[in-house]
Image (cartoon, rainbow, N blue to C red; front, side, top):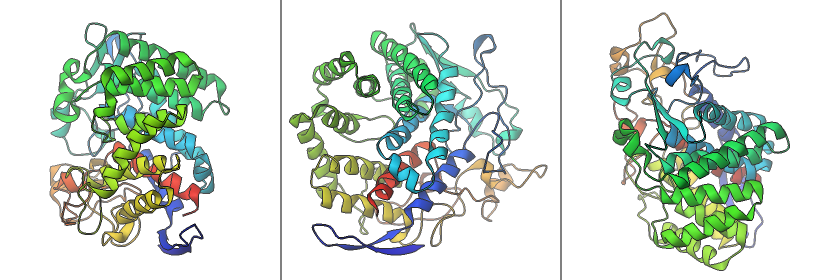
Length: 448
């Protein structure tokens, strides 16, 4: 799966690259495998069927759809919204990459699957459902989502129980996706903007961390802070609407919160470096450029690396963090900051996941890929065969190939075991693939 490409750049570098177009398209198949609700007629991942058709909020509110979070079947709204924002960002900035990969239509469908759900979940100007399914109950089940019979309660935020991070991230996702659909579906785009504005006002006027209101999320996706999401949402609303009110709000909140002094890590619960690179692009102000340069230089030159060169930020979801870093570094390179060296570093992070680390970490791709991802539905044989904890414990590979999924990855010494029981190294998640997929779209657009 490795092809050799020579690029004539200022450095006249000759480099090896994997088939990024295939990996990009495969990542979209992973998102199909994570779909909840009534599946469409054009579903490509045919071993998945309709599921969780009774997901409801109060008074029978329809909460079907959206994405299952990881190897389980909870719908966690906060990481789902972050996933959608990052996917939309890639689609907005790198439409050429998606087009080159023949994946533009599927990319739009992937982000729309999330935003359609968010529109359902936003049931009132100051009410947003942020979770369906109870963590401990869900995690006591191993089987197919199509066969679930346990209770799936829905949890919401409102004016009395706020969640600025959740509401603001959902606003950012809707605003970013409105740009994706601005010309292809103007009516849908306008609907997304309407909800995004309401959600931003809700987030800003009723402040608090969502995990203090939706307490079941604390054990899984506890929020550290909501202030970065407020700035992030305002910046995306400005980009989507060109209304300077939102830019003024983003910049004033950025200064009020002192985001220039925060850790720049980019993940589902931290948007600081994303804010900095976005504001640098939107305003051309040097101080934002300087701040993102400081963080990216830290990643490239100071951040811990494994012996084989992978950026090592955290043991849980190692490759997710490295892929997010690669995407932010590629965004910074667009600003003209050390463009050649930044891009070289970023593509090496992606190539590690595709095989340079010793084997592929993407299911169904490349040399010796994972075959035992910690993922319930793909481990199950076709119905009506039994699928339960004995299936989980079986030594054989997952019955279905979870094509395109990026697993958690190695430890700080590049050690990895393809073991379903090891959920730290082998679980997959929608947010794991988001920065990875968007980084791939940049590399495809650049011709790597």
